[in-house]
Image 1: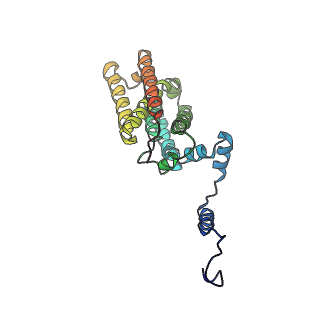
Image 2: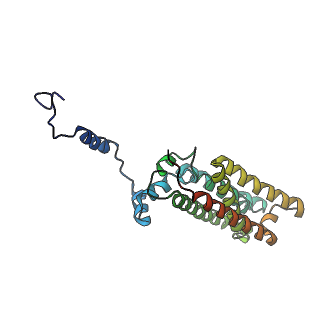
Length: 236
């Protein structure tokens, strides 16, 4: 400080701590990119926009991987006649939505805990965004195959159930990995059970008697998530 003030002593009316806090704020200040600014305007919440764009399963590598898997499913459907897109959609959505709950995988999870936006709102916004994107990818992949297009909407109900189950398990156990295992494992067992009972993999999609259990699982999972996220935040 001796190079700033001749006598080496700051004036009494200068708050150095406040000055350096301002300097640090300018140094660490981040300029949001255009997508984040547009999303913040749309949602009327910069915090919620930031939370959405830091969701692990909404990052570009994850979206690219999901697109590749759906594309591979469309090619397999064309080649085999089995609706692989419809069979893969619930598992892909369940995995992505489980990773919408962030402990251990979300780099912004601790930050989101201190935002003015509630944990529940952040989680629900992430879940809705992932579900809409995966649905769009699934429908786009289904458009390339008449077989897949025939059951294009038959997988939306099981996808909702698998996604809800994966999210509920992730929230209860505070582990997205456990949620992914629960959702994809339950869906795999359902598909294999349908094949054993009816002789084809698409039975889990075509059997209308399964729609009611799917809806019950989805509703129960949603209720559990809402109950768990309604709990007040614990102090650090």
